[in-house]
Length: 475
Image (cartoon, rainbow, N blue to C red; front, side):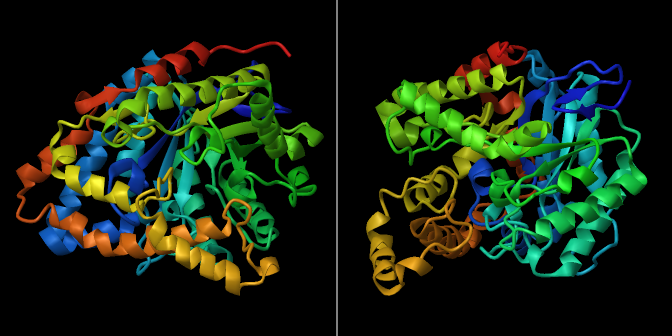
């Protein structure tokens, strides 16, 4: 079996035949995220808190069982049954090294990653390795698992050196695996200088290529994989490389500017947003991969009788985006495969031990809007609006748009810092206390809630994905 390669604007096999990758992101697994599995704050915070409540040994047992159950052979078999052929695996650097023991490889980091790569290969599914969280945090959001809104990765060379070292170790381990479609070295960077990212990509490219000249690389644009305007002619030095956009649309979220009815104006907005992200690549004849995209969905316990109507609207967004991608023969990876009911293709049943245990806590999280992803701040807007108004009065207009503006406007920054970092931090121990007194048998039962057999399928989403898994249109 041959490696997948980048040839001009296409991905091809060893015979030069075009391969279009259609799949999903395995998020919330080896890089846990609060909205995906229901905890507050960042992964390192809940791991520390759970160790305090049940002890280090039982805490490690729970998280190991969670990793085991979250993706197994049954998941790979189901994924393949939909006609999809690629999974982007998000992982956290903390599985491979400790901050207090840097550059010392933790071999157990490969335990679950190897297992899932092999399970996918068994069912004919390619994988793309996505380093989703790095030392210091490469972006300003919770999924970098650094607990702050400052992306310190761009301020400390040693953090960058450690990531170069980690990718060298990963390249050594996976250089011969042709079921891996490629490496995605850095998820959603937000480099405020716009130039340090290019310097880092030059370093990581050379470090990987010195060990592994075979696998394709997928490089995210700056500002959450949306901006390539400062890349210049850097691509001349990068062979066998594709470029990753993340094509989320506001129409697919609660903060949508208007109901989505799929009229000509709205479809043009979808197309223009997408074209703007890939403009730099199109000008140079480069390969584009959509590494993340997709709407979120309403839930009966929160949106009530409006759920079905909201979700039909989100499916219209989904279909119109896919129509664009099919026309361009685009490879894509929708976000996401599995969660507790907000965005996943499959989601944990409300009747499982985990969902029953956290039923009231999840309702509290939703009311307080402490997750940034698709937050509905209706119940707490009156709490934060005075602070927003105060800042707008006291800060000069020309100083209000701090990077990563325009992705983060002033209101978004207040929400991220006040709700999603500060308030969330105070709820971390409350989450962990739910496990107090549990023995390993009980912890295993809770972790098993995430097994495929205990999940429901989002049939509307999966049907649309299946219909489009192999569909392309001539321009």
